[in-house]
Length: 474
Ligand SMILES: *[C@@H]1O[C@H](CO)[C@@H](O)[C@H](O)[C@H]1NC(C)=O
Ligand SMILES: *[C@@H]1O[C@H](CO)[C@@H](O)[C@H](O)[C@H]1NC(C)=O
Image (cartoon, rainbow, N blue to C red):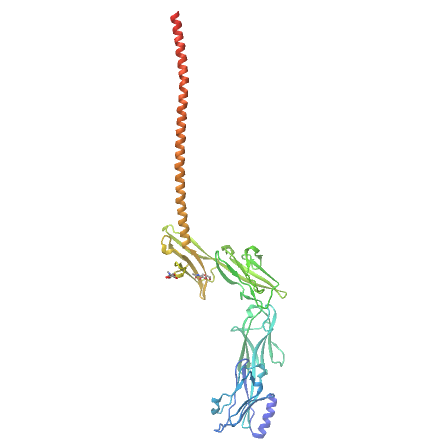
């Protein structure tokens, strides 16, 4: 094309004495390209302007009488993709604006003003992925296309704002316009890919965002999930919607081990009641403090095992009664992992008769001491924990319920005391009755003893009388 232009230039040079100067314009696919054209002799009279593309005919034309014409291939759904904005005409500028540039727009354009030609080379730069959305762990390629490719251009890559050096090296296919990076699809490669092309001291760039098919939620490994003791927590494992895993397993990692995992017993969780096969999240009901730790969702997709690790952090409130002030209770917010937490805040949640909730922030810090007797302290005490990005979770101490329970308990004790006293009295009465009965028994025994004694006495006296009588007879 350049050669053609050169020959064409030579030709026009020979005829008109004009020089062929090629202006290079780079434009990112999808943006608006501005192709410059300036009249060297701006005249008051409106000239005829013709923009044409090599091999594609007229793009845009404006006649001396003001009539405009747009090539049919440049009209999409009734709107023109090309135009020469009018305000620039009086400055002698007839720049062509091409909206939503496509790769096949790249090439040579000629702007003719009153038989004087200006040549513009439009190069369209684009980043594309192949396949467009690769499956996690698949091999895929990132292409940096410049159409037409400028000879001697250099390419470098930026991934998410930092330089990316391809492990496989840049594959250069000779004169083809593709510059390709081949990689294995991992989460680290998700994000914005920018290709920077250097050409004749100029830097131009284009970007595209890469996403992967696989486990999309949680989007990265070792995401922390926060749950309060006793609550229900969802461990997410959501796949791209076009994937239907054959199998999905949930495991809990052995503490301190990177690879050893135990399958979660089926009774300990319930799958989400989701109609979709791509949602393999589960619910853990009534989380206990010992449930904290690392979990793994393991799915089989297209002959491939995909894994996602996540960490469950469990929060609880420890209570202690201070030794000095018996009425006060100290609440302490405890998390199984505090590495992300930077702030603790205690809020007091109360409900009025209508059940309307009101939340008042009371105290910043990990522990809180409240008086148990004060009715003002009834309601719920919630510890909210957060990091710089916002609230991570909360755990609640039910003050009113505890007070209520304590009330019931003391009433219970009173009842018990009453019963004990009653029983004691009964026992005492019983004892008294028994004692009385014993006494009566003893007395009766004594009464029975007397006749015996009388008999003995009687016998003795009878004997004595008889002896006396005998003595008298003698
Ligand atoms: C509760 O609701 C009733 C009627 O809906 C209203 O009149 C009353 O003011 C409410 N009380 C409070 C404390 O919000
Ligand atoms: C505690 O967390 C739950 C669930 O995220 C939320 O609905 C509730 O409003 C939070 N409570 C407070 C007091 O922040």
